[in-house]
Length: 143
Image (tube, rainbow, N blue to C red):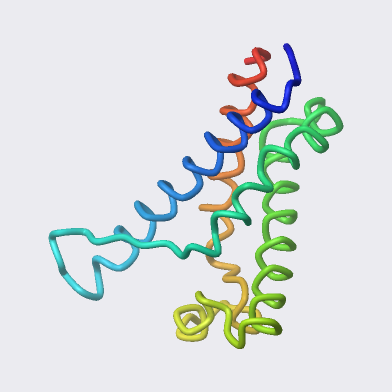
């Protein structure tokens, strides 16, 4: 597989788009019980574009080291990495922008950590991580 900048950029954009789309679907489904809006309006934040753009380079670095482990072990390890990125990016946004965009919603939840991550989202992050891994493998021709 050629690793030209065009290929890397294309793969990065694909995984970024998948992350954003999954987030919009997830927020629409999660908000439905409280708002009962059948339009199922989902949302994301523009700040998520550079954050999701980290997925492909992270896969390039992490997958070769993780590929030998069972699926659920990989999913759990990826979830921990996602939490680290979510927490640190939220902290940076709070520090430099004045507020992390998702913290108001997260503060309402029982299982949040400083309004920057939600521990009850662990299963969703494991599923998302394994979807990212599968897509990465398909893009790299190793699926």
